[in-house]
Image (cartoon, rainbow, N blue to C red; front, top):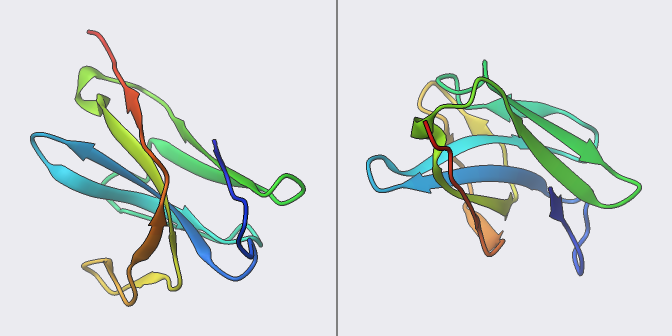
Length: 106
């Protein structure tokens, strides 16, 4: 879960990104305050992003976890949705969380 403070929660899109040595930064998906989501197609079957507007929080859930999911997971803010087949951002991530290391042992 990522808690947002000091910013307009409704004015942005809220993202999850992970980083591994093998793949580098990998965008997982995003959500807005209304609950509209957008996912990386290669990951969407196992990840769910949800929002709690009463607490200004958004959360990431992962199922069918494997050792390959070991990564540093970041939350980040962006001003725009990803569009197009390549899911490249129109804007950029202008604020990042500190990251959390998630380790999955096989």
